[in-house]
Amino acid sequence: MNTLDIGGIALTLQGPEHWLAPLNTAWAEWQSSIAGVQVQLLPDETLPTPTCAYFEARPRFVAGVCNLEVPGFVGRIDAEAGTATLRAHPTAAGADLVYFIRTAFALAAFEQGALLVHGAGIVHHEVAFILYGLSGSGKSTAAALSTGKPVLNDDLLLVRPTARGWEVLATPFGRRRVREVTAAPLRALLRLVQAPNDALATISSAQALAELVANSPVINADIDRAAQLFERWQGILEKIPAYRLHFRKANTFWEVIDAHFG
Image (cartoon, rainbow, N blue to C red; front, side):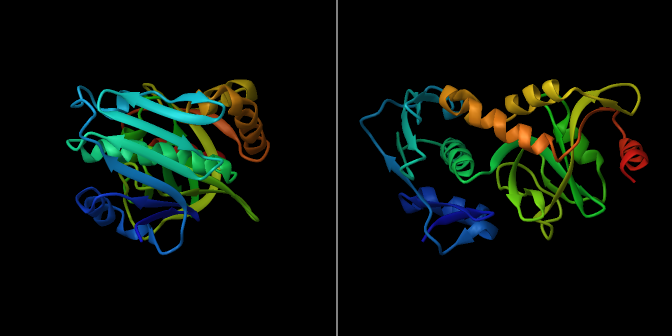
């Protein structure tokens, strides 16, 4: 069984072996024998040859069902029914398949009370800090500067509730460092701002909420899930502090974090 299992949120992948084999190799540590959301990857020669990367397809929702269409690709994800189907031209690249799979995962995670978040998850003193922001804010830079610290991922993280509070988990959708560490309790949410000096600054709950929603891929495109998305982030912000982290291109910003959080 080709099942991708991240923190108990599972997708069972079905498709031709030449598509699945590279994914199984790349995601070996996330393999599972349990059944999950059924994801079908179907080669379709009747579709036109792709003219762009599938990543350019933006989620379009109708009654909660996600549709992703560009030339060469027709994808449909019904999270409530637990099904996802991608018809793709046989020349589709591996990155195209991954884009569909991670979109299905974002919806499956949300249905199960968790969130997929754009951010760099860095473990420091056995707790996780999410350094977040839109593309170009410095997530990968901050992760690369955090020498000696486990990086759960520098792009996409899973945040889920546990009996002990919110937890951050590694995902295969980006770069990692120190694979022995796969999860840690969430300590703080830090909005990255590249600056000449390192500093932590307060941020209003409203501003933090708006920015975190903006960094919740796929789900933030669905107007029918908007209220629940806002409510979920509000619940997290009631427990987890959020700040702006002004940082320069050096690992000294961890000194500022230590001075504040201990």
